[in-house]
Amino acid sequence: MKITEHIKNAKGKTLYSFEILPPIKGQSIQSIFNAIDPLMEFAPPFIDVTYLREDYIYKQHPSGLLEKVAYRKRPSTVATCAAIINKYKVDAVPHLICGGFTKEETENALIDLQFLGIENVLVLRGDARKSDSSFIPTPGGHAYASELLQHVVNMNNGRYLHEDMENSEKTDFCIGVAGYPEKHFESPNLDTDFKYLKNKVALGAEFIVTQMFFDNSKYKAFVDNCRANGIHVPIIPGLKPLTSSKQLVSLPKIFHLDIPLELSEAVQACKTEQEVREVGVEWMIQQCRELKEMGAPVLHFYTMGNPKPTKRIIEAVF
Ligand code: FAD
Image (cartoon, rainbow, N blue to C red; front, side, top):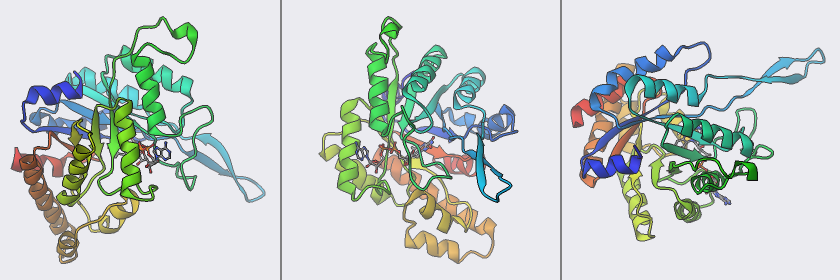
């Protein structure tokens, strides 16, 4: 079912959903099931599967220079989605990124997704490869999420890249995009970032999933700004509890977000990592209670392979 229909059918009741990562090299699908099993009691209508881009493998050349020898392969997002649908009978939402795909490869991936009965996709630009300092579009691929979105919309309208595909079955994807309550880090200001988000919705995005945040006032301002500017699609807050003291530094660095003073001071006052986890979970429980009151349609948790904190939080707010 489409995410928009799940939300409509819930008639204002808050839903709970999860994001997982595909298994890292060498791990079996069981590692994914172990991360999902404890959360199934909350009846998630959908589970997102991120796309992790392959990175280069380097080999030391006799001259001392590092030489690119191959891409690191990972089990695919599509395969992980198929396994989830098969085991849990819930909707799996693959993340589809621009980076690493030519337009033809994107189209082939979407045809596979349609074949699997997948009805929702989250379209993203993707991050820069670790080996690159900024995002470099793949030759023959898309440079922005909006271009990828347009490609999916074209396929939904039966317009394929090549004429000989024109008689293929139309796809019928419900398309989501990313939104950043605290601004995308490359954007010069919130308004510019917002302009591009608005464009993604005008092109056909039907829901927005936000970057994680620890201050609900940022989410509220973001939603208010969207509504005031005519964006009326559901805005799903993306959430992750703080689970270690190191994350006071790593989360702002990686995800370009602020950690509120009250939370950072509470973490700094902890004597053990166990205490930090308690503080992180309690903070997120309060955030979730408020978000429910604000009418957030879905609380979407970035589980990062660890279901325990998410389970405790939902048990407290369910
Ligand atoms: P875009 O919407 O393309 O925006 C990228 C930047 O370009 C922004 O600064 C925007 O303001 C600007 N911009 C947009 N359009 C234009 C234009 N036409 N001209 C000039 N500037 C423009 N990354 C992964 O690699 N895999 C994942 O699975 C993944 N999942 C994610 C899930 C969520 C919910 C979120 C919030 C992020 C996720 N990311 C993932 C990270 C995401 O790929 C990065 O944040 C990336 O840097 C931007 O992606 P985007 O789709 O927002 O890009």
